[in-house]
Length: 146
Image (tube, rainbow, N blue to C red; front, side, top):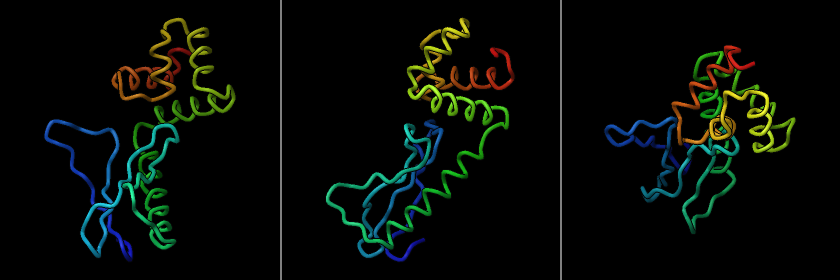
C-alpha cells in the first residue's frame, strides 16, 4: 500500500481463470480506479496501464515501479524449472535473432515437427493456443525437439 494509492487485485469472473494477475490502482483520496497493473507480454513483465487524464507524481511512480518489479519477479518464478529454462532459452534466441519472426523461422526450419503457428505461439507467448504453447515449451525444455 502506497502513500496516495493502493493496489487491489482483480478477481477473474467465475470460470475465467487468468494466466497472470491484474491489479487496479485506486486513489486513496477519492477511491476511484486510476489505472491498472497487468502483464505486458511484449516485455515479459508487469506494467502500468494508466487511465486517460491521470497525473502521477514521483512517489506514486516509484511505488508502482517497485510493485511491478516485485510482481514480475513472482510471476517469472512460477512454473516448472524446466519450463522456465525453456522460456529463458527462447528469450535468448529472440535476442540472438533480433525478432520473434526470425526465431519462428529458425524453429520451424530446425524442428519440422513444430509448424510455424506453434512456433509463433511459443515465441510470442500468445494467449491463443495457450495449452499448445505450454506443451511445446515443456517438450522443448525436456529436449524432445532439440
